[in-house]
Length: 312
Ligand code: SAM
Image (cartoon, rainbow, N blue to C red; front, side, top):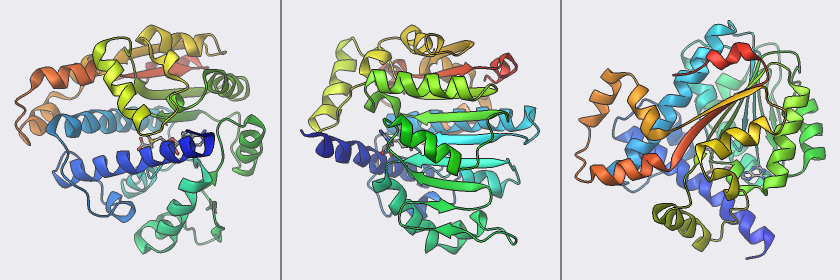
């Protein structure tokens, strides 16, 4: 597969993630009134997939809410490889405001997201501001708080320029989010990006969600599935264990890091929520769910020790 072909395959992983989220939302795993504007109909996914997406989405939401709470909204959020994520709209709906909310992805993804936002009143309203005209072009949208920008995250010069254009303030507490993104970047490129963020944002928290424990048979099957679809998993070596995940931050300028697989995360989620979603679908294959959870992890890293407290 050539590099353009593999970028296309990586871009397609967003359609996949978005339709899985839409499916889980339709079944009642969590509330999201916006996902339907980005993804049309979708087929029904397996129960363990739905639960996996629930655990991932609810964990991010809990951590983001905590960060907004401890910073009193005096913060920025930067979602790298955001895809069709709807977090911004869910926060606006809940009245949780931040100083800046920036999303980066390949222009091939942001152009489609721009189009959906532009033609959907419910999406456009939340990025608009009475005193500020939303600026829109093919790949980029510039609202007062919300900014959506097309960029190749492997190109640091481009990232630097786009970060500047996004009016991000390096001194403000800043939460970086990467949900199944770094694995698609060559290790050296993601390392460069992480180091650059740590150097520039002195009060940053990074939340990284991706695969781990890829060395066993199950991990191999997961990797092969993605590779058969043409994805270049150039960053998979950083996903060997939760420890390799932690190290990638510690070795690239971050002051501290924690990593926990989804088996551990699941046991820390609010019990009433776990009880509620466990009723939605019957799971005949508990072992399959456990295997799946053992192969994904949340890693948090901080340049400012205050944010080490943002945990489940
Ligand atoms: N974070 C979203 C979510 O979890 O719903 C999307 C996840 S999807 C699996 C991976 C995303 O990362 C895609 O939208 C893809 O385009 C983006 N991505 C991967 N490599 C990238 C790069 N080098 N530059 C910009 N975006 C990239």
